[in-house]
Length: 287
Image (cartoon, rainbow, N blue to C red; front, side):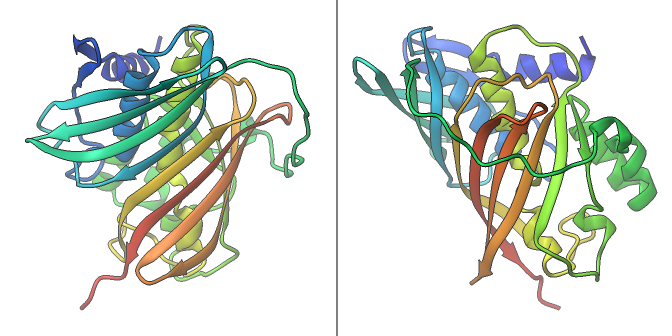
């Protein structure tokens, strides 16, 4: 297994302190705060470890309350809201330095047959025809920033279909972005693990489409200050995070210092696996 992926899996392997209390390590991504995808994935791990194995996550709703401290552990407390015949609901609060930094509600369901339809997968080039992050980033960004971004994404093979925001500054275009992604190595068959890794990746690029609409490059070029506010995901069909997934993202609105991103994630064979919505702070720095 790729060393960076093993490091990420170790990060998601929480320490169980009490029956419903877990502790996770933290690390900085490319900014001096905990990466939002990390705390969301860890919170979902905590919730999932209190749920029967035959129930899989079908949705999560979360709020980012405070910037996480990458130098401190995060304690996750799970509240067992409900255990029904078909559905299980959990609430998780992540705490650092005595204060809540993140709140998540997640629901799990036993599999059952039902109605079945989906939106068709949009066209996209094969991922093998696209540049990897390690190939693309050094061509577009200063070396020190490119190196940090490559390291932060080393566990995931993430490939942009079109130029990302930091590569098209000053060129407003349709607020839509596509990326292919998969983990840099094979994973165990545990469905919770694949859902948690998809949750981790889902926070990496979702607000890109907001920036594209205005020709902004984001934190990498310093023309926007941003942070995730809330995040929601619905897991529709089985998928593997170690196989190619298409993240099709768009922004329907930006206003009042906030931007909204919404997306669908498809398996390579066209199955709609996940729907995602996120709102974030998107501020233009004052001179």
